[in-house]
Image 1: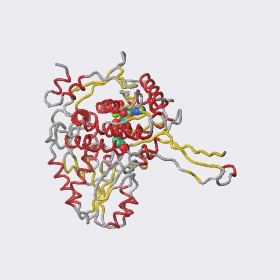
Image 2: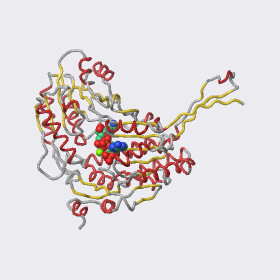
Image 3: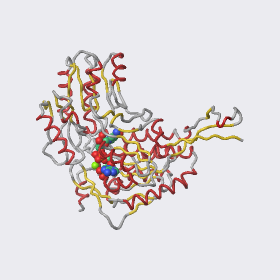
Length: 505
Ligand code: NAP
Ligand code: MG
């Protein structure tokens, strides 16, 4: 029995999933799976057990170069002949095929990342198909404008000035492991809608659904070379993609630290760059808020995806009047959450992605303990296989403490309090971070809500909910959380360039 077969024997999986895992995964270049005869391979693990379930090739500069050439040829060739309406049809077909492959995509996503079944079902059945449907509507609506200009002194009627919106070209996409399929969707859908082509380097820890999605896109009618996947490590394949002179734009999602490396690597040909980076988002609770809503909402804001979520509400600012009730309520939810493999439908809280990530989270909790934080619940890794860590609440924290300052990317909620006083002081505390990705305000007072919405320095702020994403609503980071926006109409902009044209006759 192979390592991967025994690692999967305690799950009930579809044949499609088992067959996919049993394959030798290479790179998807110009519509074909390519298997390099040399080079290393990467083992893919189930984070709920730590056991190997599959493997893929580790590509480098040569594979990136071949993929960029294929993407350039497709951009200038067959893909450029597609009308906007034909691109719409293909993107809509992708969403239909995602729905048709729902079971397999759920199983692969859970095995790769560890997320619980209900969340995987929501992602693969709702979030991802809806996102493709939303972007399927855009190709026929990407328009330039006519401009009442007078180039070279021409009078009205003697000249015409207008703009063309053109695809930016070959896009290099680099994605993280925390929500693998949605992260890839965020790059592929706007690239297809605008007429770009793409070379994707998925996270080395979670490449499975990205590879399956590339096949689905091909089946939907996306021409060969439009979507290419090179598997591999960030320092080799990722760095080669970011530096490649044939790439016109990098769309990166990952840590702020690697984001800085991407900017440096992109400087060679001054390729355009968008960055979706880290976060340390505030959840601000006023005393008049509906606590029945706040307590489960704040627990979900932090513990969703085991806290491995860029938008996670990991700094809770709660008014001292309701502090005890809110903290006890969240801790009760955290203690009651059933830890277990995502494929067990009764699990409510899955494993972290790797042993390194679990140890890193544990280190932040220990640092907080030493600096005077009170561990209200959780705080350790249970003795069981896999990379589990308990949902944790740290009370009595301050802005200068290690777990408060750093993006932990794990299930650790840091609580601070505030009293009556001006909203500027509350906002200053909420904004005392290098990040500015997301945030939420909880109150029944619309005046407070609207003032706080303006004062919180983040790309996304929600009221009486947290991380309220929708395909049509722009999302992205202020400060060191990133450059540019994804989602919505604004999410198309980084994939387009504007040409200004003036003509006379
Ligand atoms: P990461 O270490 O920055 O990696 C992200 C991607 O970059 C991976 O594919 C990685 O490859 C690759 N990479 C690493 N070094 C590289 C280099 N020198 N050049 C080019 N590519 C390189 O981030 P992560 O640990 O996977 O993900 C967690 C981070 O992502 C968190 O900070 C989180 O906040 C952020 N995130 C942000 C958003 C958002 O929308 N703002 C969404 C999700 C996650 P390997 O996989 O081989 O390391
Ligand atoms: Mg990594």
